[in-house]
Length: 96
Image (cartoon, rainbow, N blue to C red; front, side, top):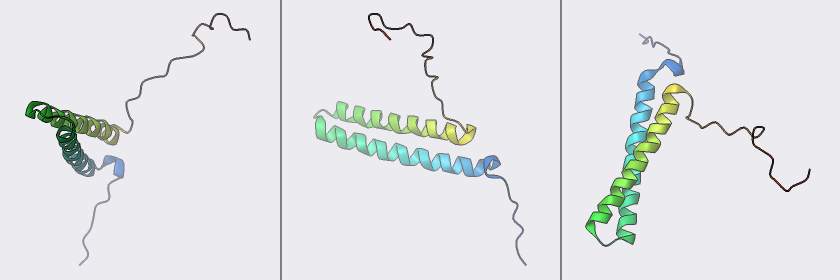
């Protein structure tokens, strides 16, 4: 007997979104922590600064994963609005 699978649209499949976000977060956390550890071993001698580079790398990994997960869940990336150039005054001393 064949199993009956319920098809859910991709944008409503929360379990797949959570799986993707957890996978992304773990990978970015580990890879950026390893990059921070390598950078700490390469550039610093003190154990405190080496641990600080590991923590900095881990923070970058979690931050970038958070940004991408918000894009996955909400469908848009947080972008700053560009300034409107029409409202800016024309530079002095240049003729058109």
